[in-house]
Length: 327
Length: 256
Image (cartoon, rainbow over all chains, first blue to last red; front, side, top):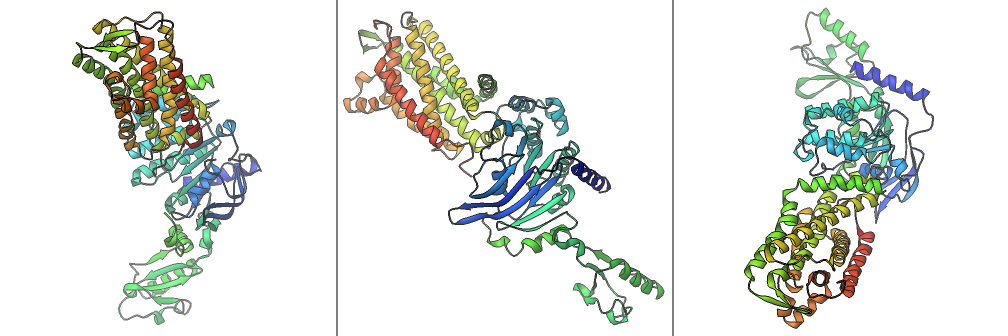
C-alpha cells in the first residue's frame, strides 16, 4: 500500500504543476432512451494525470456515460468536452489521442498478438513501439500466439495493449477486470498502475470496490443516473468521519457496566455476546480499554477494530436503488 | 486513405488465409462444384446464344458466378457479422482509422479472392474440359467479375444489418443462395427450367451475373462480349445494396 500511496501523491503533485484545464469536463449530461432516463443530468471533471473511477451498480448509467464520452453514443442534453473537443463530432485527430478498452471485445480473428498490434499501430500517426507495448502488458511470451488462443486474462491484456499502441493521453477502461480470477485482476491492476507512471489520464468504470480503492485518485458514484457521492477512496461518502467499531468479548462475570466510565455509555451488545463500542476517537478509547483490561490482568483475544470499508460505504450509497435498476 | 485501405486489406487477407472454414466455402467448394457438375453431365451439350457448347464448358462461367458470390457475399457476410458481434469492428472504430478504409480494405480482399477464383476456374475449364480461354472477350470477362464482385460486396454489407447473430450468418446466406443457384443457370441450365421459374430467376442478380459471365466466356459470342443489360442490373442491385448499407450498417454488436 505504501508504494501506491506515495505514487498517488506524486501523481497529484504532477497534476498541480501540469495543465489546469480538465481532460474531461461534463455539465448537465442527460441521456434518455424513450421514456427511460439513463443519465439524469450529471456533472463531472477529470484532471490531467489522474485515475478517475466511475462506480455504480449495473444499469446505473455508467456505460451509457462512458460511451458518450468515447463518442459511441449521442447525448440527449448537456455539455461534454473531452480533450477540448465534443466527442460526438470529433474526428480522427481526436481519436489519435484517446485509447479505449471496451467492456466486451474479442481478439481479431486469425491474427497473432504481434500482428494485431501491428495492424492497430498502422491506424495511428505516432504509435508506440510494438514489442515494448507487448512487454508493458506482459504478453511477450505470447507475442506469436493467435489472439483467439489466449486465456481471458491474456485477451484483456491484449485489449490494454491495443488501447495503448497509439500512445494516447486519455484511456477509457470500461469494467476492465470483470470475470477475472484474483491473480489476473492483480496483474491487470499492475498494468494500470504502470499507465499512471506514464502520465496517462485514466477513466475507469468498475463495480469492484477493491479495484477502485487500489487504483483510483478520485471516485464518483452513480446510482439510477444520478451522482450520489464523490471523493477520494478515503473520503468518499464521509468515510473519513465515520465511527470506528471496536468489538471484543468480556471475560465471564463482567458486563458492559463494568467498563471504564468513558466507554460504558458507548458500549452496545453485538452478535454472539460481542460488545461493540462505536467510537469517534478510536485511539483514545482503545487506550482506555487496554489500560482497563491490563490493569485487571486479562487479555481481550478477539479484539477487533473495524473502520467502514469502501464497499460498505458504497453499498450504503447505492443499496436503496440497486434493485430497481435495469440490467 | 489509400495507404490505410492497403494496410487493412493486408491484415484482412492474412486473417482469411488462417480461417479453414472460410477457405473451404470460398476456395474449395466452387472447385468441387465445378468438378462434380461437369463430371455428372459430361456427355451433354447446352444450347447457348450462337450454338451449342459442351455441358462441362457451360458450367465454368456458372460456377465462376458462384465463386464470386461465395467470396464477396457469403464469406463477407459471415466474417463481417462475426467481427461486429465480437466487438472487433467497434474497437477498430475507437481508433483514428477512417470507416471507409476498414470497409474498402475488406472489399479489396473479397474482390481479389473473386478474381483469383475466376482465374482458377478458367484454368480448370481449359485444362480439364478443353474450354478455350477467351482472348477477344477477356476484358469483358474481367470487368464482369469485378462489377459482380463489387456489387455483391454491397449486397453483403446490406445483409449484415439484418443478421443479429454471427451463428446465423452462414445458414441465412446459404438459404438465400442455394435456391437462386438452381434457378439462375448456375447448377442447372436455364434452357431446361420451366418458364415461370426462369422468370423468377430473372429478378435476382445471380442470374444476371451468371449470364454476363456466360456471354463473356461463350466461344460463340461475337464482339467484345459485354452483356450490357445484365451488368446494369447487377450494378443496380449493388447500388441498392450500397444505399441500404449506408443507412443501416452497424459497427456495434446487435445481438447483445
